[in-house]
Amino acid sequence: MNLSQLYYFRKLAELQHYTRAAKELFITQPTLSGSISSLEQELGVSLFQKAGRNVELTKYGSEFLGYVNASLEQLDKGIAIMKGYSGEGDGGTIDIGCIVTLQSDYLPRLLKLYSSTNDHETVFDINQRPSQELIAGILEGKHDVAFCACDGSESGIQKIPVAEQLLVVSMNPDSPLAAKPFLTPEDLIGQSIISYREEVPLGSSVKRLLDSYGVEKVRYSYEDESILAGLAATGSDYAVMLDTFFPHTVDDIVIKPLYNNAEEQRRFSHMVYLIYSEKNYRPYCVDHFIDFIREHKLDLSNANHIYID
Image (cartoon, rainbow, N blue to C red; front, side, top):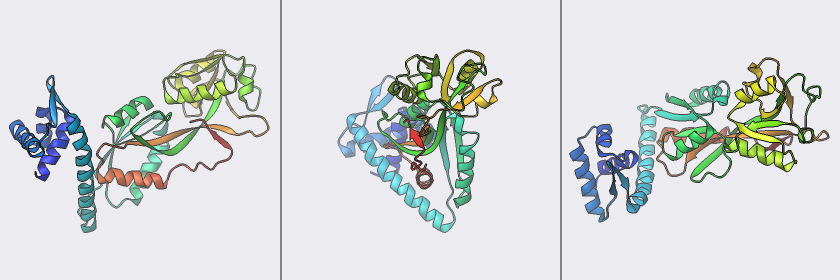
């Protein structure tokens, strides 16, 4: 067994296709096939099995992949650190998935701060997706890390709280509640409410919150703040939504803070996380970035906020 065989095995496990794996490894398909066959003979188990035109890991291959990823990850880290000592290292490329509402403010400031404290240049490949797609992308290895919402039901995911977004209620200027300085959940009882789809993490969190206060007349049907703000501004519904840049671009809209009650006046807050896979291989530059995020994670000690997720 040699180091090349382990790298070949990892790439084939990732792509599950001999031709594409060989192409990315800059070797011929027979060379790759021979290397994997030799590795299987040495281990005494089959690592792959046919799946149509592709291949897939056997149960032995899946278990072995965990050991290979851990070993190569440590090796790559050591190489990167040594190159860093010698001045020969580079920052590498980090594939980041991100929800749209963090891309105009939070993420640019974060990446600028990271780059200013990092000795080597790091390239960031940013991909915008909804939270559910980002979570799936992390588990499938499409992204190294992602900034998105989570509802706590995701398995195989590690998360770090990084930002918060406040809940507000948007409405038409002629709405009966538009004159109030703020709203509470009790104000919404009996009103016609719209909010996010239940199938998305934020929608399920909002539903749990409103259910706990007995707010029942709610249509959980919408994807994001842009459509919610537009409907609230032009109709009679009240939109329970996040205070992002979207509603502030809509004409003739009234936006009110949502407090838990008139006495305490605590705000409801939605958390955004950096997430990454527990099992997927991570190069040194990605782990370095994750460590940086841990040092700059969200302070959850604000007593004036109630976190809904």
